[in-house]
Image: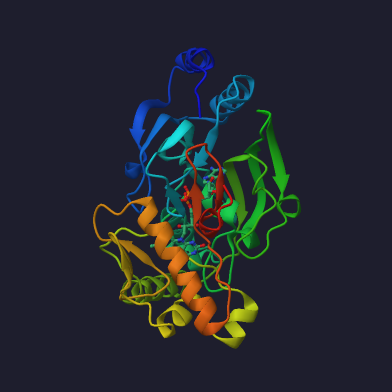
Length: 327
Ligand SMILES: Cc1cc2nc3c(=O)[nH]c(=O)nc-3n(C[C@H](O)[C@H](O)[C@H](O)COP(=O)(O)OP(=O)(O)OC[C@H]3O[C@@H](n4cnc5c(N)ncnc54)[C@H](O)[C@@H]3O)c2cc1C
């Protein structure tokens, strides 16, 4: 992609008017995702408030600069060539959490385990299933993430977004149309800057016990030391009922430990691909391709990715779609 340097410099002038927030040029994206993979972003920007996000959204639109929104990057595969555009990180600068009775207001950059912990300490229940999810509230809302077949959407009352035109807007739970690992926000270009949740009162000791049990199970089941992006493939109700979850299917297809370059199907949990050190995005994509082919041939099921691939042009897609040549 050719860069319009004039547009870039006019865009940079807008950012220079900020009196807070952080801006990096040529920032290696490997430092901003849990797989530790990815080349540089032309610009990486971490705003401090919704107004700055709105200004940025208006400017990328005006100057036609590709934009990618990220949180902790725990569900993303960046390309080795990075991103020719702006990466907008909603992170620790927008990570406030306030609890008022049964209502919780959390910034889009708030860390999910911290949200779960504070809700537990306030004697609230409902977020136990999120304690081990290492992403941000914005990423969780976008993906309707959760575990034990639950999703964060169940507790959402309202979400504050900045839309693609740079307007700050409030959306209700119904507007977000949450379904399994999906929300109506996906594909709209909206940025989640805050979420309001409601959680019923619970018994602190019981909530705490459930969280500890969840973390203990995760520690046993999931690889902890090697960089990874959590579950690579999505489960479906039909698949689960007929042949089991993706991890079981991949293991039964004999793929545990399969390695391409420095990417490997985890020996601990077959739905995880781990970076053995220096893995490239091409290694991971080739391994995803191989897993899908073997599972299709041996088990007869089509595995689709939960993990999103980010192209150098700033396009996001389920990682298997890149393998299929859709980019
Ligand atoms: C070890 C491990 C375990 C995991 N376990 C689980 C699990 O049990 N359940 C589960 O659901 N997920 C799990 N995940 C995946 C991941 O943590 C979640 O999907 C998480 O919600 C993603 O948050 P993030 O901040 O990292 O988002 P990112 O990975 O940065 O982004 C994910 C998507 O959300 C978008 N996005 C991020 N922030 C915003 C924002 N503020 N506004 C608009 N869009 C945004 C991005 O554009 C992208 O499309 C796991 C990951 C790991 C590494």
